[in-house]
Image (cartoon, helix red, strand yellow):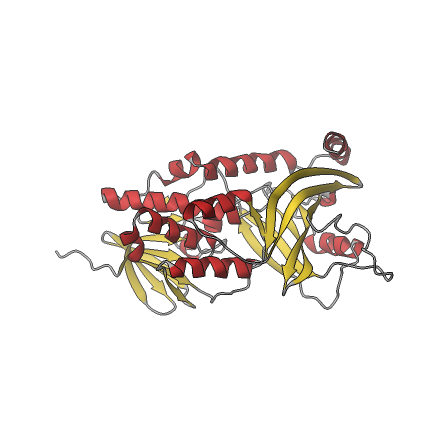
Length: 375
């Protein structure tokens, strides 16, 4: 019996940070293998992407090792301000992270990879896949391909993940975000509860009293070369048995307090999948990366972790081709041994510590202590 024909060695579903990082790391480790890899994107860059846009320093470390510079408008954050019913404490660190607009960041990253030879087919969505002898057959909105390996880097609603039929409990966070100009009073001054300065990110935790497993954020950013604020609400839902917080009411209240509510502005929501240390990340010939696998359960931060997923996925793929073993049985261990797994595990346990639904008096005491220690 003749062996099946393969159109590509690897197919990558998704051209966000996880998918492009996987290709860039493949190109670094094995340029010939990267040349036999196809990246599929259901949209077209620059594509809308709801996200706070926080790029942690770990992301720039990964990009630096790849010798990739993403030159898009950004705002450096030197201070993170945490608020709880009037109590405030700060984490001050120069260049703690920077805030970008995701549609610009993702497009620039994809363009950098294309300049190195990445083949990207846009407006072609993965619909389904099936295992065939020695690989997978992938059905897209435009055709069918056969490959030795498939990477699902296609987000929280991953079609690849859905067709892996993984038997797990849901691990989905909820987010709503909008873009606003800095709010001003009639006298032209900043409204109450506005950002302390242009390099401070605000995390308001008042919603913990109302069942929110997260926070409301205010991130300064640049949009069309003008100052703006990326505002949103994150509900991690790591405790699935707890009643759902009313995100609409909580976010409306936060916007009104900031003088930033615009009844004509549409709100946009999106899911994220949070990381669990015991989750399934692969099956023979298929592995997951980025949001499809799971990101930060505590704060919902995904960009730096997505870029790290690419590093780990590329190492697993090159090892698979080197040993002609596509079971990917060691992928989870590789994730957990990397800074990626260590960082995500820390965030998982931090979320378990902060979001179980503590009584308000304990939360008040905690924030009182933190405001004293971190003044």
